[in-house]
Length: 183
Ligand SMILES: Cc1cc2nc3c(=O)[nH]c(=O)nc-3n(C[C@H](O)[C@H](O)[C@H](O)COP(=O)(O)O)c2cc1C
Image (spheres, rainbow, N blue to C red):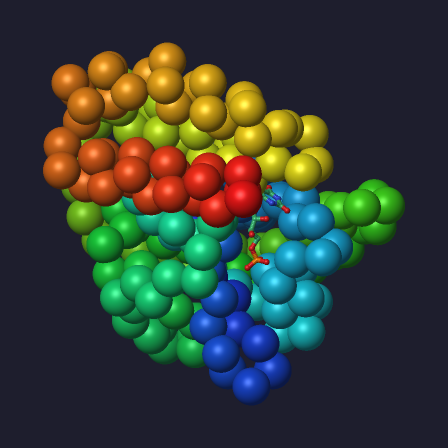
């Protein structure tokens, strides 16, 4: 099963980066597939470590994938950073690299894990926004702006009906992102 997470990683100058990355947990390992042109791949290949943050708000995934956010973080004893508002986080150390062409397959050992906040539960608006984030992040790769436009229009009512203020903010962020892509 692939879990959509916010990954935090550092570059060699200790600058923190956030990205949205799908990961698989297999026993005490985490496996993920960053595109070669991402800061995440570059950072993890350089520093050999990072943090997987499990979140229950699409807001974090949307902003991590499509912008350069400055989320509130804390530092761990191992020198990694985690999102203060995550449900839980896993710190990892890179153990294997496979070259898959446009992507890497990275396998890492989980070195520490901690619970932070209770999971709020499944929510339709948040699930729909997560899908919108995926479409938005693939514009120019496998998706067209029209697909995001149609998706946001089709799901606006449910998102506004079943979500909260933060879901609306996420929706409006995506609308703005779409407008910029269309220019
Ligand atoms: C829910 C979600 C999951 C994603 N999973 C991946 C992934 O597994 N691998 C990847 O390369 N990009 C993935 N992306 C796209 C990256 O988040 C996006 O390319 C981002 O800009 C990379 O950031 P970075 O350059 O700061 O590392 C995902 C996006 C979303 C919204």
